[in-house]
Structures are given as C-alpha cells and as structure tokens.
Length: 251
Length: 98
Image 1: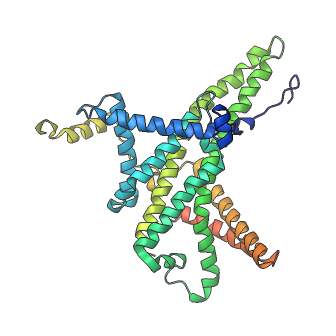
Image 2 (image 1 turned 45 degrees about the vertical axis):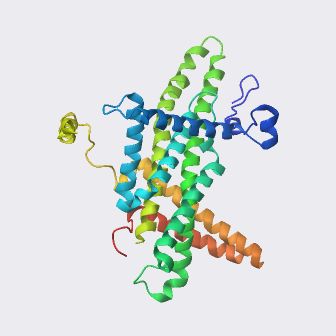
C-alpha cells in the first residue's frame, strides 16, 4: 500500500495535541477541549440568538432553535411521558453537545471529540449515574427488584441476578461504544479514501483519472457521515430517554 | 392570539397534503430499524455485556486471588447478559408490567 514511501495513516487524526501554546501545554488543554468549548459556545449562541427576538413568525435562527427544542421535547415526552419533562434540560444539552461534536468534526482541520471513548464513556457514565439515582430516589428499595423479575422461580436467582446486573452495567458501555465506534469508523474511512486520492493521483498519466473514483466515494461518504452524525446523537438521546423511562416507571 | 386560532389544524392539514409527516416512526421508540442498524446494535450489546462481565471477573479475581475461576464464571455471565440484551432489543419489557 506504500506509494513513494508514504503509508495510509488513518489514526493520527485522533491524536490529542495541546493548543494555546505553553499555557495549554501546562494544563493539558488539547484541541479536543477547544472543540468542546467551541461546540458549547455555538449551542449557546444558537439558543440565545434564536430566542432573542421571539418573533411570532420565526426567522432562520429562531426556526432552527425552535425545531431543535421541539425535536428533543417531543423525544422526551414521547419516551418518558409527562413526568420526564424535568429531564428535558439534561437530554437537550446532551443531544446538542453530541450533535455539535459530531458535526463540527466533519469540517476540515476540525477535531471530533466524540471519537474518543474517554469522552463518550464520560457522557454515558453521567447518564448511568443519573438513571440509577433517579430510580433509587423514586422507588427506593424497590429498585433492586429490577434485577429479579417477579414470578421467576427463586432457585433461579443465583443465575438471573448476576446476569441482570451485568446487563444493567453494560448499558453505559454499549452507549459509549456505539457512538465512539461510529465516529471513529467514519473518520477512518474518510481518511483512507482521501489517502487513496493522493496516492493514485501521483500514478503517472492515468493517475488523476483513477483518483476520481475514491474522490467520488469520499463525496458520498461525507454525506453519509452527516447522516451518521445526526443519527448517533439521536440514538444516544433516545436511549437516554428509554433508560430514564425505565428508571421512572421501573418495569 | 385570535389570529392563531386553527393555525395548528391548517398547518397539520397542509403538512398531510404535502406528505411531510412521516407515517409512523420506524420501530419502537423511533430507533432506526434498518438491517444494519439492528445488526450493529445487537453486536454492540453483546460486546459491551461481555466487556463488563470480563472486567468484573478480572477485578474480583485480582481482589480474591482466585484467578482464573471467577473470570471464567463472569465470562459466561457476560455472554448470557449479552444474549439477554439482544432479547430485550426485540422484546422490550416496558409496558408489559413484568
């Protein structure tokens, strides 16, 4: 795969590099943190600017802000029910943070902070702690009945309880791995095909024409990645809602 | 607010006319239900349950010094939990009252 000594280096895009000169270096402020701040700034700007006018007929920004709000609001009320409205701020900020992280990562030179398992697992761990605390606060000791379905024979408890506990503990892991794997896979694919463009482009006379193939594929991939970026933020939010539903209603 | 009377109804009618309202979300809870989505989800569920089982087994073994027995036990438990997760994926226990 080596052309003129250069290999496909698809993973170096995920390396964390300190930014902001010596200050950033001494406190470990990387481009990942920088992009998180940018995302938070953009979300805040969108919501502040979008809701500043409060026009009856919304302008572009207001329509965008309102549709984002209503989308998540519908998600929460539909999944968790009326009781779930108090979790709306949490789910909304989670959804917007992941969505902006995924979308920002698609820009050239940008960094995708959701492509690090440390970030996604932290988000998932917050969700996990929240659903556990909510379930404990609402149901108290009855929460532990969750690990042993009613009506099952008691002698099966030594088998069912560990399996249920492991299944419950696997929620944040599956939540974080899903998002992380999708973002990493997408960016690796983009990088690999982009490398093909460069490598094939230097291939004598025929090169530029052959290089058009991976280039076309990359154009399609970028569109696909926009879809994945939105879909994964949506999946993360809706699974959070489903878990919240389980915590609130405890079936 | 009189001028807004009936606006929602008219909007809904207009949206229905243009086919903007998708007829029914895919799957339960609107989760993407394509074959790839389901397959990937099932894989992730099994994998993560296995990871959690193996981690618990390793930690308990290190704590109690019983390597490799608890690891093997929780490997199996993790696999069972993965199967349970996939089962839940298709038969959610919400609403059944179980």
